[in-house]
Image (tube, rainbow, N blue to C red; front, side, top):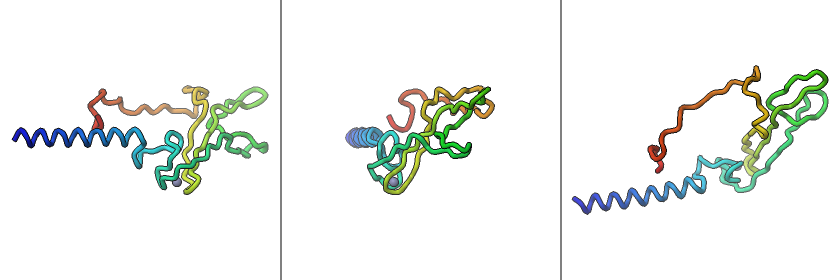
Length: 126
Ligand SMILES: [Zn+2]
């Protein structure tokens, strides 16, 4: 009985080490174009970073921004969209650069908080 328990404990340790290694390198389905430079859909390893997405809605070509702050003489763009695109399948991930420019009290902004993080070591991946 003790041998069987010891064997199962070794197997659990081995599986835990494999999960940790996969988490570090970005397991399939958990990869990000921005962070891992690897496509979660087609596993391609070449990514475009596009920083100034053209916005032609105001007549002139500006960088697309998530918010506009109205001003007396001119409007100010707050934040700026950045897109990462897989060069093989075209999957795109949108992010906002300069996120600190987004005012939390702007009428178009709602802060949605997720549940608190579980205590360290209590999740499925230790
Ligand atoms: Zn892809």
